[in-house]
Image (cartoon, rainbow, N blue to C red; front, side, top):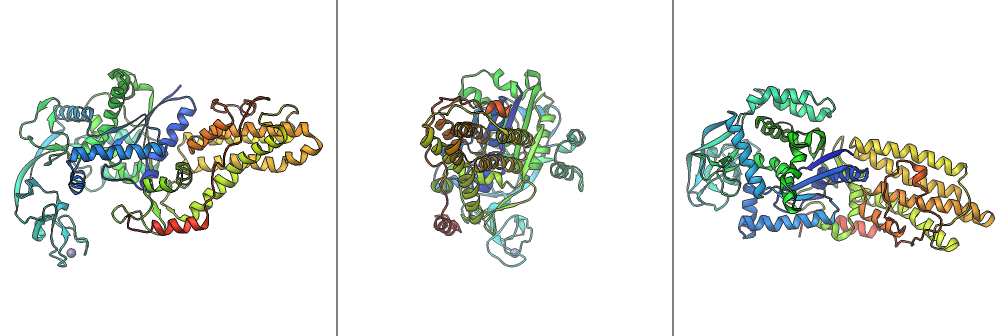
Length: 572
Ligand SMILES: [Zn+2]
């Protein structure tokens, strides 16, 4: 039995995510986790909310709540939606956890011990009215280039000119509007990534099986221009993990916190500690996933993320792990995704354009979305959600192919043989041909799933469903029944067993529907079809079943048009 550690990029806390976010990391990670569990492997699938940083503070202020309370509430909201989407995390943690505080401070202490941290003095804008330093984009003023009066300290949105906060005319705080600003000196810690450049380079060179997209992004950051830059890992904020050197205070760093990008990936590890605590397990239980000196040597670690997160996962986080000098498990495979666009444009959280996870579940069950999103995953290029395509895919693949197969064979059996698997007859050449085809296709499906080729896996699964339909169409037991009821019984028996087989194979994509199919077949045997012929005789003659309710309802043109209208902009 293999041991597989899976992490999905952790979603930011401020609000509900759209379908583009979902398909870019959590959903394909869930597909892979469910598949690996289905194969009998030991899986640890971790995700969490990313809770620190200024955007969380501002979202909390907007909601009129203390930031800790806001984060606790939004974590519950995101956890609930994730569970309703069938995301099967072993633990959904929080980057604000006690475990992450301790571990982040531990890593910073180790990096300092290894001379990989330096202190830098910077001049930053301080707002007296707000009692805090302001990040560049929270300073507003008039653009010196075009005169736009809402230019931000990092860039003018109107003329796109890159700016420094001190360039702005009449600068003011974007938080309070106060103009009582001054430039103050402040000290920050920098991680000396440049000192780790050769080690990171060698580590990436050892990953010959990584996609070129991934390694080329990492290599660009390592070598372009002046090469890999040192990175600030602290901020002047209240909300975050206090800067400490392990358990010790860090002189000169009082009142500062670690930068959210430093502590967020460390949460992948801390989350396993939260899992252990939640289940009353010892530290050794989670360390065997993460420490190569404590049992993680045989773990295969796979990360899922959008392409914009690749640099942090190939360079910054590995720099933290390598720089610690401790034997932490490093990523073995990194699966990254392009972007999903929405109906001729982009998903937009700020404009409420597109479908958000909570809204999706208000209109249709999770499996409809899971199937479309995964079968159209933006793997090799960006892909686009359109309502026409969604409707066509749901109606054809789910309703006409899979749903129709299940309905047809169970209803026919009930009408001619009753609600038990019929006995008699034997498989002939047609059935043998189907078994041979399924054997080939199931092996291909496994290979695509192992390789995390999401679209190809979906295509193969669809072909497996279609093979059953084609068989039924050509065998036509409803016709044969009139002349050879014994042979028709054998065909129906095969068909009923196919439902169980489909339930097992489809579970990673459409887990709720698969569960309903197994329930209708009145079996809990969800063993993987290592051998197609054997798998098609699991339900023996006399085994009782029930005819399930319609598995997938078709989407009407009227519904489609209504939803298209509803989600075209401005989330209400
Ligand atoms: Zn401008």
